[in-house]
Amino acid sequence: MSRAVLVDTSVFAYALGGEHPQREPCRAFLRDSRGLELHASVEMVQELTFHRLRKTDSVTAVEQGRLAGRTCVLHAFDERVLDAALGLIRDGTVRGRDAVHAATAMLAGIPTIVSTDPAFDAVLDRLDPAGL
Image (tube, rainbow, N blue to C red):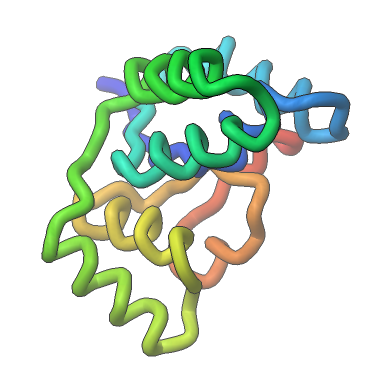
């Protein structure tokens, strides 16, 4: 049985982006993630597409967003996720979209997130692609 992990936007953003120390580790993770079942919030796809729109044309950004969405099991951003995310924000644990991603993982029973962002360390077990 595969181990489920939630994938943060940063992993796809660095993998698709320009030169950066995290680019190759993120690409390697996405290429070699056998044994893992990749999950994400639909908000991750929206966030990634929005980010890529600032770096490339709209056709490419949408293609990249769709590819990321097809790579993962997607979870809805619904009222339950919103309520849990707002609770995380209220408690000062994580903020903004990070709270949406963390709430998605927690409600889905996924204790691990793959992310370059240490902000998740307070709420989930984090795997940094650079350390894999």
